[in-house]
Length: 426
Image (cartoon, rainbow, N blue to C red; front, side, top):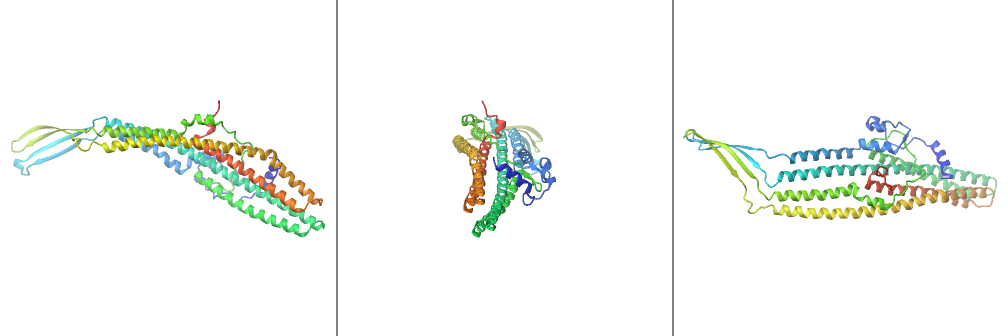
């Protein structure tokens, strides 16, 4: 960006180490962040590695895989046998005792249906973990971009301070030479005071942005660390048709489809509950009075006269219908969000290109010409102030356009995951 890179480089040399990060505890920061020493540059890859390794929310979500595995294991177990002992008549000489072992036998495919439901739960847990990883990745990119934007705004404020100080020097020189009124000096001083207030706000905003980045990463940032500056070239917007063709591959839509399968498996499980289980009993009965032992065999089964699980079957069927509608709603929402994000991305990229190619160079040239004209007595200081404000506003709008392009890309990556790994292409 003509005129912007030079001022950025000068402002970096003057940047202090105060108020940019939380206190450093490298032992808590993990191996990825420990490689970033105090005063060094934090890259996006380092931030992502640290978050994936140490974010507590993701760490908690990973336990869902083991939970689902335990549910699957439990679903495949058969019922335990039951041992019973009973005595008829409490008198010892006439008592009859019976010892029985009963084993429930599940009928109607209940065990297989339970296993199917639990297996669907395992698959859903894996997709949910993928979805949370994608969300964490997007959160880190968003927080990293916000830190970059705050850092750029701070650099812009320092450049604006240099510009305002230069304007004040020019105004004072013109006043001392008798070419301008002292009012011009007052205006320059007011402009300088406003820029200093903006610089203070920019320092506060950068500190807050760094704290938000550290929170998402799950590790404190080393002291005086700074995030890597954003690249000049923005990523190319992928074609909407290619992304929409890959919509069914997204974790959110696959999870919605898996939830349909889960509800249907639960419906089949409820249907199996309509068939009562058979209990087989085998035992031995001993009579003290007759001094004789006999074998006992028994069968028992509930009579499905009133409760045939019809209510649970109906509820499970309606949940399946609900899951289908939710899946359709999810697809519609994703399609709308993708199209809106791509449009914002494309528009922001066009704005950034316009700022780099014409707006910023023209604004810088206007400041230079107005300053030279004021020194030569051709313009008033109001023209200089107006040109300075235009340049500052243009730089602010440039940073905002870059942030909007990044926001749009983050929303796309939240849906699809890593766009580079997705290899969107012919």
